Image (tube, rainbow, N blue to C red; front, side):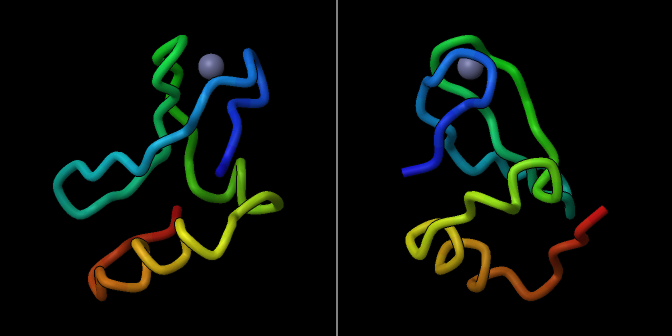
Length: 57
Ligand SMILES: [Zn+2]
């Protein structure tokens, strides 16, 4: 799983409009994909791969 760089909580994929971000369940902080791209795991990549209209900004 992906961890929040701040608190170590679990990061979940957050989909808003046509953008996708990661949100921490513990502290609520949101991250852009590129901010946590270095720890992108297979599970998350699969979720992201389902969305063809994702904008990586
Ligand atoms: Zn956190």
